[in-house]
Amino acid sequence: MSFKDNDYLCPSCKGHLNVGGQLVFATKTERKHKGLILLNPKIGEYSYKAHPKFHLEKGELVEFFCPLCKVDLSAKKQKDHAMINMISDEDNMEYELYFSKKAGNKSTYLVAKDVFQTFGEDAIDFSEFV
Image: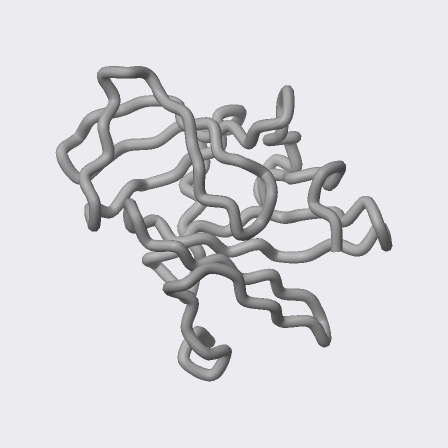
């Protein structure tokens, strides 16, 4: 599955989160620092961009918010993960996309009716995730 031209949406307001080849989020660290983060939209890629003075400490929990409606994007059951919607450019199917809120943790999950895919070296088994 190619992730290049997928649409990424806020699950609350349905606003588009991808701009200029990046996913845009408002964030707040455990240290109460706030900033915008631009994530690579390719699933399994963990690069990000932020203001030079906005540093993430490895292992710290980062809260993700929709930059449009400000809703907390924490997953309902997996509080250490954020969740957004992804509409695949290939099959026009809507997926739930979960990614770790812990800085440096490389785990991402793509979920739909009969689909469950894991990405990243820190991803755990499906039975442990649900």
